[in-house]
Length: 308
Image (cartoon, rainbow, N blue to C red; front, side, top):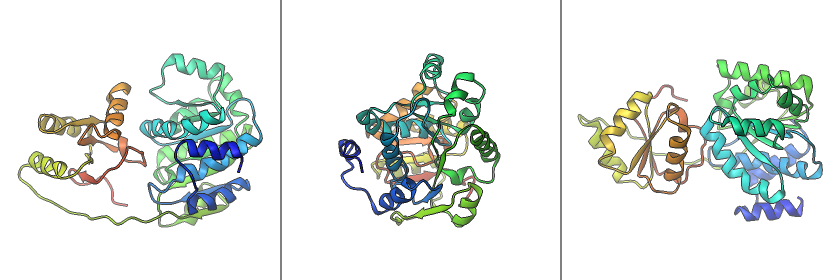
């Protein structure tokens, strides 16, 4: 590993790679299209990006070298926070482009594209429409798709894979897909056309409880008060707002969903990560692998949309 990369990793607190990250480094560095499977919190992002950073240091290029795609805008921002320290240390430019990106920032990215661009599936498709960014895509060497299990067998996934094939027409790149634990790894690897699978990480033990109450708000307050940091998932934005109104007077709590402004969502994410909030009421906007600090309890209000 390049000594500059070692120092960059140490600067963000990574002094040694995990077993998963070591296995992934060998496979990804060899150039194979790779599916990395591990539980949430196992360091999958670094497992993919450390060898990519290494290869970027060995060969610098103009335009967008690495595309990092995640299903959610909140996850985009989280990836930027996690990777920016390493990228800045190495002198590699990195930025986010999605529905929340201001027009001035979009124009700047079109004029001078970052070497690493973090985006959503929908914005990835839009990149092909602009002449400058389409030209920048010709230099893509690495395509990383995070939380791939959320994009298999649905319309978003179909549209994403169509865009991936469009990218294959103009660029020669290595594909790295990241997934939480799934039942049929080979099937997913076949769908995303990955020749290698790397699996690892530490499985965690969880305690599940089903509780009934005539006063939901009081029960949630009691549960949240007995823990340090709680995520409360609801099925709709309306439910999130209604529950927020009931609980904000009793607890330091905020609401997070896609209809809120960018600033409101970012403030809620940051305050929760800093421990300023007891709980965060959210829709699916916060459910995918987002690093928002230590969470010691998760409450699902009403029945979940699906059980995996």
